[in-house]
Length: 354
Image (cartoon, rainbow, N blue to C red):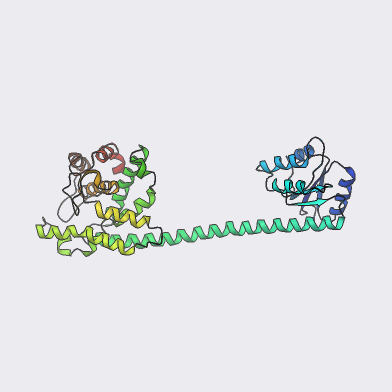
């Protein structure tokens, strides 16, 4: 074993004989630093990091209990295991030392063979502890990587399914991307301005934006004749179209699992259920009004209508952003939450550019 690879141990004792006996006993297997006082030990620790410290309890100027308190309070030295050396027999002293963070006691005068055995045992325990910590760290990294891979795959499946639904009425996945950007702007504005703090403080914005993809999933149950009709819908056709909200909520509820964390599906169901409600109570399917409409539903309504206005549909050409903005503003207090319209106006560039 080379000098560079030998485990470094520090022996601290104000008795020179003890230092000599201890160093002689350990030097065959380890590199040994000696210090005649706790103060000298602290000075050495500024440039050296031993794997183990053998620390005398009864020393002048600073005793072992005071010294270990300093060691355990410093981030650089708190993890170095400390074995106390003592001639004291009182159990209270041993208990005090263990409570302060010592891993063991060795009584003096010590037998060289016993000293070597106790040192070897604690070094083995420390090596095993480090190996276990490294394993746990690596396992955590592997689990996180695997989780990200699974989530990425799930997101791709979800995006493909939603795009398939959206494509049935002549739109594409761009509608989903657009509404997600607009929704994120509104969510960020509400959080940033400290609005609705009781609700917004519990939001996971990324999860909210992801779950909004399912707001129109119920369109899968609406006939092509209605979805793709280039002209105005008849009252009967409009009634069928309105059912996509009910279908969407039912679809999401079938996915819910009461035993797991279903925030994603809870958010998705809120977006699906309430994004066609209107501030004045003339929306559907429940005819809710004002703040009786969940905030997330009111936000989705703004994002959804703005994208519908600025996008091409089977029944219309896209409106210019300024024109669409005027329509949203005209709907303040009628179709849309006045607070959200104000936020929309202020963040309109972000809606367009993000």
